[in-house]
Length: 110
Image (cartoon, rainbow, N blue to C red):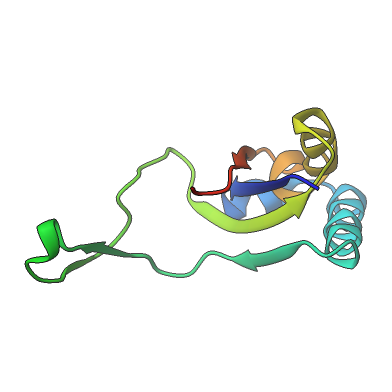
């Protein structure tokens, strides 16, 4: 079954202003995805890693990407296709609490 990487973005203040019943239903969707085998986690503090031409490792604290909303978490889910993956994440906390979820098809490396 195809796999998809999801990145959830959301502001805690927006989450807090979302009605509790909506948040509870969204967390139930997270639990359902986990029961189907999804790997999910809350985003920690990122570190950038570079090693140009294998000449030495350089690390820098902080994200490389920027967004108007903070990264809240990640998941790896399985779905038959992109449409099903979108349907699955459309009811998770970041999607319903005024945030956004990106869905990236995970293609196997050669």
